[in-house]
Length: 510
Image (cartoon, rainbow, N blue to C red; front, side):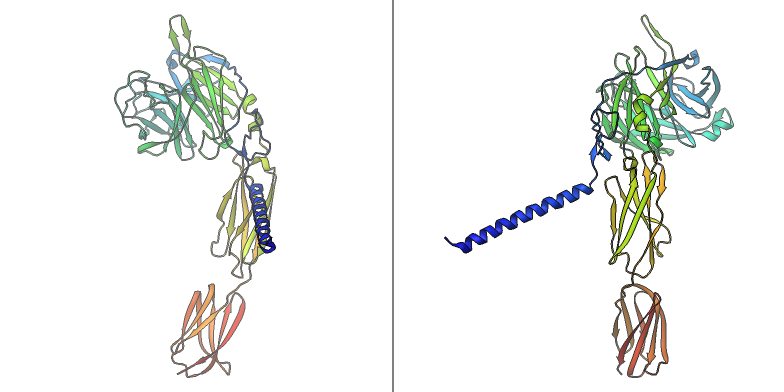
């Protein structure tokens, strides 16, 4: 037996074992710092208490919900379609072919208290209302007649104008769908390019389509500014029904859609705990309402868990469902999610590690963190700038090569909780040690000073008796000093930078 060969093979085997063990340890360390994806909703069947990022996997037991009757609406509002809650009243409008009116309705009596005319608008098929801080948006995008409208638009009305009088002029947002290329008439209720639901979210408008053919809903985004735009398709969701209204509570990251089945059984579709505008990637929960033969249309949030809903009048054969307002209490469904504790402590530690700054933080409670941004301020920045954004599961960051200069660097954390409320940590200051490593190059006419980093300072040329022969202020990684007029001899270049002094001797030749 060749024992030398055996030892060599065993050595290779052991090295391979060591490599595999080291690799596994490395993977485990990486996993320990990674965010955990899973179901984050305590109300779900598959709630994962260790999950830090909702991946949309939550499942729920079947349930239904009852609405509470408020009042029947007057015949003026038989085709009420969109709703919004603003200025102490519910605002609504009629759809297809009605007058270009916005109606304010008293929530105690159901009486119309104001009628506002949009003077430059035509009500071809007004389907939903949305709002932001300054504007009301009226969606004239009903398209179920043939699915081939080329005049889809949204009217943008200033709230200050509505408060000032009963006649307003709207800005107009014209749009078309990114994925619609065929405008052949499809016949009544036979298109996937109808829309009755809209929200204003951030600086965009989002549309939820009412797909008559495949019972799904497409999410589109377009700017909230006047002009002609393309509504970009962002996602699609199999809602197994017809979506008719939408309401967003942005600071709770919650959207409630209304809809009904082909047999006029109404439902709501909850979208919540999503990131950014990926509305279909968080929790998705469909809940039928205990009602039948109801063409539910509009929804408006009075509070994050209390809503008004409306339905059009529906009359066919012996069925006669009047137009009415009702209320929905969603606290039983959304309560565990909406009860979010505020961030109560943010501890940030920063240490110098050579030229790097090493940051580590602890935030409590971890379960309520939405995201964390690391911010830095230096003399050059003169204000805090964002370095990187993190999601729950990461608690450290290394800022590379920032401590090269002998000056203070400030850090802080910007933390958002799941209510999108922002808190900041205390500022932590770390100071670097300058490492200039000056080099000098000499020619007959110039002395060149080169630094490893950008440097502000003063350079002086002195003769052997200490008298100053030349002086120059400089800024940057290099500077030149004219020495052509100096006679041959030995000199000293003295550099003052960042409160410290450096000296080098050099020989000037003729």
